[in-house]
Image (cartoon, rainbow, N blue to C red; front, side, top):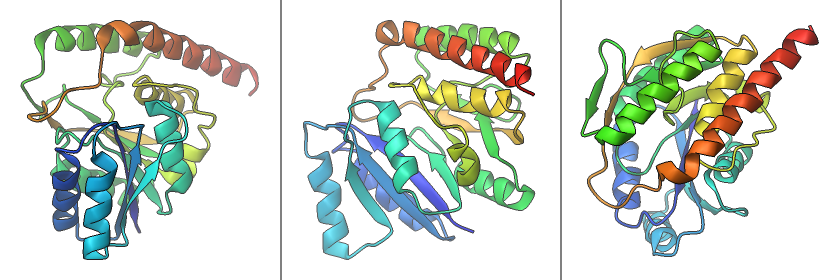
Amino acid sequence: MSLSIIIPVRNEEENILETAIKIKKFLLFEFEICFIDDFSSDKTFEVITNYIDKNRIDNIKIYKNTSPGLGPAINKGIEISSKNYLTIMMCDGSDDLDDLKKYYEIISNQNLDAVFGSRFIKGSRVVNYPLKKLILNRIFNYFVSLVFFSKFNDFTNAFKIYNKKSIIKLQPIVSESFNVFLELPLKIIARNMSYEVIPISWKNRKIGKSKFIIKELGAKYVFTLLYCFFEKILLKKNK
């Protein structure tokens, strides 16, 4: 068994090297890291490229995104990934590598299509979540759970793991920004694919600036919710 770790990056020169080194030291099973550089204007690409070349590392790679946005970056990562399972992580240190290990053990042992993490169930831990974002997050995720009749309550969290064969079935992925992280789990649920939910930990970044801008993303999240809802209805009619 093996894992592809897709990490989209934009202007993460202060974080990218530390992220790569931490993962490399922590994981003991076969893996690859696929950084997708989403049109960085700093030295993100140069920092990790120099590290890879200097240390002759073959399981860490960085690719240039060909169309700007998180959605295209994720699509690119899926396209170039080569392992059995696929996870999406952020480069800001917010995701916990212990949770990644749990994800991998569960999905590989139980042959699931996906494992979703929730930051808001018993056993989870959240550190320094900005209050305004937290309130909006909880309201929107509660609304999504009602629309999809789902007990899952953290759809918008990026950090999940998928069987690569399963995520390919979700194509086309149409979201262009952070709403891609809503589209993927909704499609898993709409298709009645197998998944498990576990508690995970999350902590706010200490270095750099978040790319998540609430004002710009509201309409995109609503579009994705409606798109996936109507897709769910069409799938039922075609059965």
